[in-house]
Length: 376
Ligand SMILES: *Cc1c(COP(=O)(O)O)cnc(C)c1O
Image 1 (cartoon, rainbow, N blue to C red):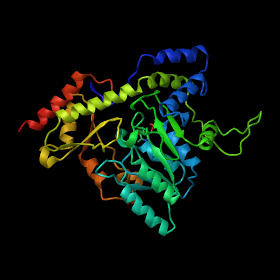
Image 2 (image 1 turned 180 degrees about the horizontal axis):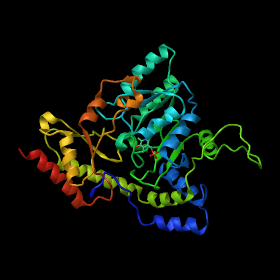
Image 3 (image 1 turned 45 degrees about the vertical axis):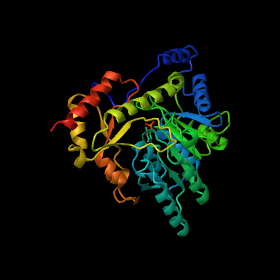
């Protein structure tokens, strides 16, 4: 590929912080760089949040589910259209996922549908233990509505903000500050990266302390190794955290760049049959990936026509996430919805959106799609 969907984009300062980690010999899962990285994310999110650096976003979700009390046999209600790493931890806990459709007005979890299902489940005495909505492609879920539902029904809320660091909910509340806990990912393709890593963010000191404890092998206070429960080796490497310090310095800039890329696609691919993921009034999406949907009737071209053409020119694009209820793994799982996510999977495409993409590269992507769409 010559033009990628989303690549790591260094600021140049990361190596300075990595060198500091080497100089102090903190080549370990804990150290001053990890503390500084956690503090910089906490500052960015307004200073009220406890942040715990972990080896991945999936690890963060696994621990979040355990800390909010999800147990084997519990139900976890979750967006169907998401990445596997945002779902598999439900299975690690032996819990059962129930999949929810998206709202066509926002392409995030349909809170109306969720509210109806909660009312029904409450009557039947079969409430889920937790709800796990995804900030899809960097756009905040309807956090106010979800937090109100969680409080009304006494269910726990864990927000998957892996794609939305730097984004905000309506009114300016930052993504990553929602629910009982939120999870972030610093995988190589995300808004910022530590090469691989994640973070659990929570207002609750108790949850944060629990995550620190479980992510370092659940060692009870004692001079020897003492264990009253089992843990995991999930803490973020101090060396990787050093990369994260440099990345946090450019986070706002990276989001602004991705938003500018999205704006440009929007204005130049304003063609019959192409529609863009909507951004509800007052929201500020990270536009992690620009997501479009192609109506073959109107466009005269299918999503696969566009994807195949781009691939021939070594330009990477990708269908939207395949909804989990359509995956062979989840054959027979419960799905609540009218299939809007199925429709998006059939017609949706993510366009190259990396913040390191040049204007010339984006112009090429745009031109090639324009040419394909307008020739007879
Ligand atoms: C990337 C991602 C994750 C998982 O993060 P990892 O750091 O790759 O484990 C979870 N959920 C969503 C929506 C993601 O995009």
